[in-house]
Image (cartoon, rainbow, N blue to C red):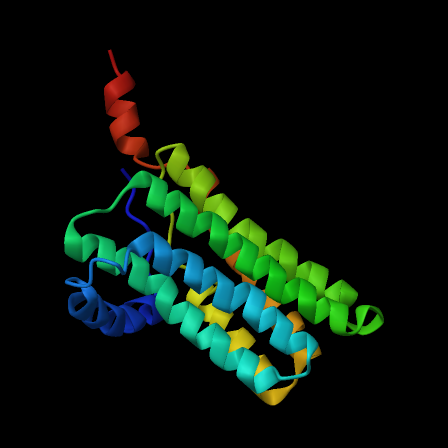
Length: 202
């Protein structure tokens, strides 16, 4: 099975979440799935509500907490040896909802100003994980890219802290779509061509 690509930022964050997972491993009432749902609530519903209220810095804090929890659920499952396909699916699906909610709320703040850039960002954030999932489903390895979810969340945090929403959406859209194009090129490039030639030679 293809190995999930990991960026330097993902690796850095994981240093913290692995340690937290070890501390929580003995707390049986704290389960990976509960952390996944809580992460989605904090990063999607709560952050979205705070953005609508104009509390951008508190929303940034909510996104930070959600990002840490998003890595913690998988690390806790690995620490306990309870990883599952179902848990991975839940995590990925809720991540997509969180991404959508945050960008949709940012667009809602001023549709006339943010609509075009926001839709471009939504397209990129949807295509990056889709191309990865489609590639891995076909048995092909994906690649780490500059548009990983961790990088996108850092951009969202910076945009919220500075209040620069339009630049955030423009940069996020450009970065995520470049990352999607990069992964697409890798996905449609034939792999192991030498081995295939040898296999097909009579």
